[in-house]
Length: 135
Image 1 (cartoon, helix red, strand yellow):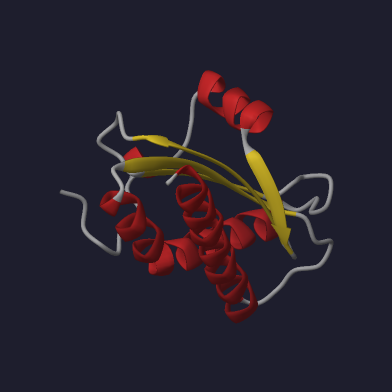
Image 2 (image 1 turned 45 degrees about the vertical axis):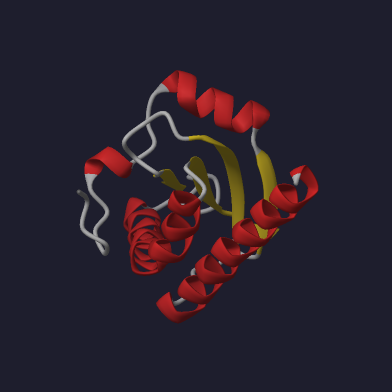
């Protein structure tokens, strides 16, 4: 069992096939400064959520800034992922999720955390809409 507030390697989204599938078939929306791409499917893996965090080199030339932003986004997700995972576990589903930073300026942790939280809420709302349409 994975602890509630951790973000172990097994939850990191990697692999060329999985990434290309996510970017080709996934649904996307923007909660500025983040672009979120996701796929929700029936659970077939032990991991409920696989997450990718990226900051483009085109916008932030210095690796220090890119790494800091990625660290902030991972921490914001780690602290709030229980909202999403609990909802997915109730319905026996899993998600593949990518957070892409799209702003040109660096933001502080509180802003990023607020945006990650609202992105998670938006995913839950979209998921609930599709569940009610199916029923």
